[in-house]
Amino acid sequence: MANVGEMTLMSHFAEAEHPDGISGAMARIEQAAEGLECRRSLSNSAATLWHPEAHFDWVRPGIILYGASPSGQWRDIANTGLRPVMTLSSEIIGVQTLKAGERVGYGGRYTARDEQRIGIVAAGYADGYPRHAPTGTPVLVDGVRTMTVGTVSMDMLAVDLTPCPQAGIGTPVELWGKEIKIDDVAAAAGTVGYELMCALALRVPVVTV
Image (tube, rainbow, N blue to C red; front, side):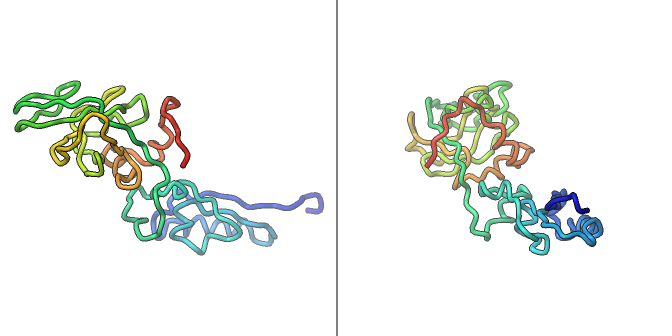
């Protein structure tokens, strides 16, 4: 191949999150590269973390650069030293006190069992927060872990203020970030962190820190 310059063999593993997920692909790659002098780049985030035998000349991590797990489970990367670098935050713009039996949001999908304070947060599916996130999806209000209640609306969502009675209008809310892992929000909504990162709307202000 006198007329061929430097070659690089690149591929992308589809099942690197599994212990034996790259063995077949590695065998085929070795066969294809037999007799060739070329650099190789094969490892995505999962292979970078869990398959050092596939690192070769350079790796191409993706979602782990954001501190999220390629498996969709934070526990799988909790001991790696990775930290979330993206935070989606907002604040409470309204507070309501529900009586027992009163419902919240479109479809009335959450019913208060007792008197309960809820906060209205300025974030919704038009911002990229998952509409299918159910009641119970974790959220952080004024540093206190609590949960969403009811259906996520276009521009707003409701949260339970029972664990944080000090919260009021203007109280900061972390929807995902350092404390509320994006993988946990995604799992609650039946999706993956990749989708949530890609779905953030252009109208969401971006602050680089």
